[in-house]
Image (tube, rainbow, N blue to C red; front, top):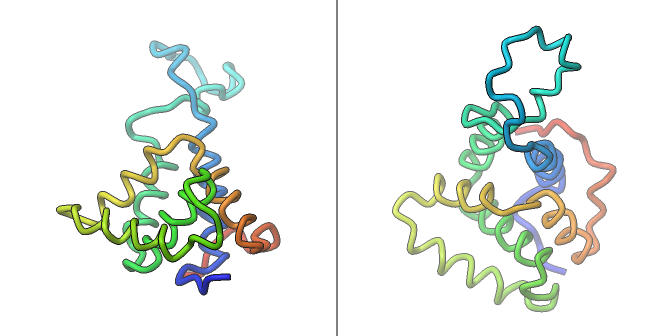
Length: 143
């Protein structure tokens, strides 16, 4: 099993936040002007360009060091089925190579990850593939 640079606690936080982000849907009532409590606060589930969950998640990922970001991308690829746990080193080398083509690696890595549908589930699957129990970790990371 590979030695991860990112803690299971941080991955758990990202999984939970990404799942919050993944459940968002297109605006169903874009002209809504009523009181949120009258609408059962349904607008909170709508995807908006100024989504605070996306902003929090992007900021958290951008604040990570290079090794943590590389592990995160590799975990996502592992969960997506792009390789197996045995191929971890090869997957991570591919992630490093891809990162070398970024103009702003921290920002572009966050954009790349947030652009992946079902990011939370893919990261969870990657952790499971490595045999890392992430379900008992704290939901608020210690940075």
